[in-house]
Amino acid sequence: MITPQAHLENVNQSRDKILAALAGLKPKIAIILGSGLGGLADKIEQPVTVAYRELPGFPVLTVAGHVGALLAGKLNGVPVIVLKGRKHFYETDDAYPLKTMIRAVHAAGVETLFLSNAAGSLRPHIKVSELMLITDHINFLGLNPLTGPNDDTFGPRFFPVSDAWDKTLCAKVRATAQSEGITLHEGVYVAFRGPSFETPAEIRMVQGWGADAVGMSSVPDCLIARHCGLKVVGVSCITNMGAGLSDEKLSHAHTLENASRGAAAFERLVMSAMKVL
Ligand code: HPA
Image (cartoon, rainbow, N blue to C red; front, side, top):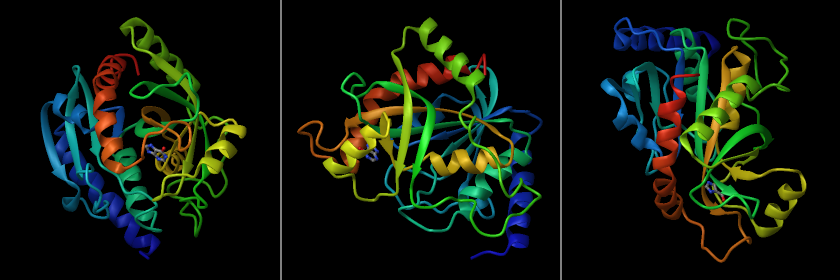
């Protein structure tokens, strides 16, 4: 595991490379694109692309559908950083690559992190290829990315997450969906560690806990972001019903295929929300 000092150096070096890529642009928002939602990156005007491998401490990606690149440019005329690809905790125990990515964009001046993911629905009214605004989460990963020594440079040892998903930003995304005529459900996202999908019994359990969608990402990102003072907002693209809630057979290929079906609405929502977030 990397030392805290080496991590700080990675964050600072990556921040400088991001600032160079931004060439004077001052984005308030960074967007992490989830599985199958990478198409939004093609909508960036005059993008400057930096491969994650050029950014010290950034994740080296291994999953199909996750290309590791940071893009700097404008979306719908608004300066933005888009992070295409992230590392999941079914791939590694090491939270540092994700910490470096999020802390470096924060150090580069970003104030808000927009998270997106592919998720399974836990509710019959939330249908495949529809979108869900994340209003809260349940961390069922069995880990928290902020365990271990705390570096006070980034944030405090203990911090509240009662306001993890920003209410004001939620209201803005909700209003955007309404004005665009996009169906946007709302609910609680529960993160499992994966890589196996859930059993039907696990799905019934988390339904009882009050979760509305299930996935394997975004919760660590949210925690790291809130720790360093970033505001967080996020949307799930529903790619399947949770295990046991339909006859479909779950697979990563199925996730990617159905994410692409919801991607058009997702892209429209994010593009339009850029003007108000
Ligand atoms: N479970 C966990 N992760 C997922 C799912 C699911 O049903 N769908 C997409 N990502």
